[in-house]
Image 1 (cartoon, rainbow, N blue to C red):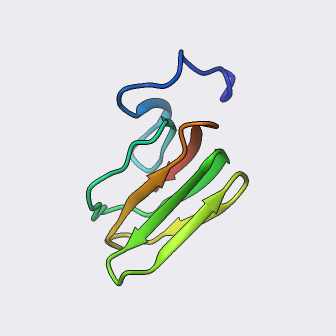
Image 2: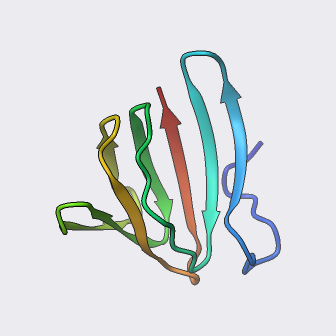
Length: 99
């Protein structure tokens, strides 16, 4: 699979493609074109790499983290956060590792 071979854009809903999964780790490619999310409170840690596009994460304490192509972030378990913004052009291509 090529991480940058994308479906016809824009997509109505985020497109999540599982790349690898086991009991201890899950790796996904996510394509966003303007979608946002509700609040996440995940039991696992998450490492995120934004491969293309621009995005903003918002944390429960009100901190907003702008992300651009190439940025990475580590989100510890149970750190409440949400995706506040994703660009549509260029689309956001995320590589997410849950462990």
